[in-house]
Image (cartoon, rainbow, N blue to C red; front, side, top):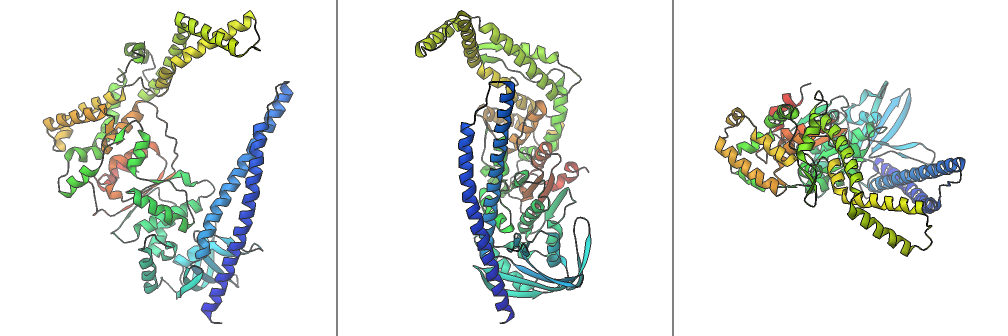
Length: 576
């Protein structure tokens, strides 16, 4: 047998091990699914016993334990499913490289793949390309080399670096490399990568890319390079590496990846599984800001593109996408804090329940030492209390009493077994009256909870009206042009529409005015095609996720829209 035949035998044996693990996981999944179905039925039959305090406590503890067991099974099932997806990718190409090295006089052979694989004796057959020891392949040179773990540096003698190209379980090519990956082989892999979907791109990592991918110390990283230089590949590999490196505390949903368009998002979703990861939320910024402002529709960017291609940069759009107006928001908020924002009447069917004059008076009674959004949070609590009092008064209205009486009679008519006593009837009548009023006031309650007593659309328009003339002059915008623009924005707001650059400023103003909850918790943010990502958009992400690590990637000579690029604003965006 020659070397290639021996390696093919090893590939066949590895694929057999993958098949064994797949079969085992399939069996476990079927068993676990059956267990979960039974457990779900048990949950439905599980009753909280209310006979005594002891019985109630015991049954509640049992129910909680049952719930936790069900949740554990669900997570196990989810993990098994993810592993099966990884194994199905590995079955086609179980690994892409091999390293032989001598450590403490013992020679070891390791194969590198998108995930680790062990045999039935728990011996490692394939190691994950992101493991510290895999760095021997990416950066080690034949001869004395080393790799670093979190705590130690381990010196070894690297004896072999071999690269494979495997498809459908067959070795198509096999190359022994020394200091760097063989150029012809690299070209072959990269040529392969230009097909519909990138194949396993892990094997093309070079030293410069590897330094970027494995960097765990930089809070902000900017990768700049021309088209075709491998930036996006490196960005995706960096995501996969960081998810592996921080796997004890970092979940895929804590990573946010912005791509230039939906086609690119679809493409990424096919590449990440080939790197050993999946489930990373990928979206365009337009889609993201739409989720933050669901009540508005964002205007198309087509006009921006055509204007830019004709060489007609819109100075207003340039100003709004930069940091000029972002910086103005803080000054504006300070200027309105003492008087308060623009309030609106809270009405039901044309009847004013809470007038804006009253709301303003209550706002002025809040602690004037506090910032605006804290004062509005206190005002919200005050309004809910006032609403509670108004609801109590409303239950005494004749229309409520009449409707409660009508519903009470219907109850007695439909349920002949209903126990009748004077006290019971009085209690039921009161309960029905409260339900009627609560239903009537539900919209007001929801409005208070969502800070709808602040007229945020008028507030945004007022903010734009207060932009100093000196700033307009600096951006070569005439006062007449600005007034025409404000009239257009007023029309858009009336139609619940916003251009994207206005949506960013609108949301930043809104969250500085009153508390806004964003459910997504991003710890790492990745931005591809950074040249089309405006400074104001970066400022928004920083405001939402001040502790997140940021990685930018792009070609500054390929700006598609007429927006400001982030490069001119780096010192302002990243002071530290």
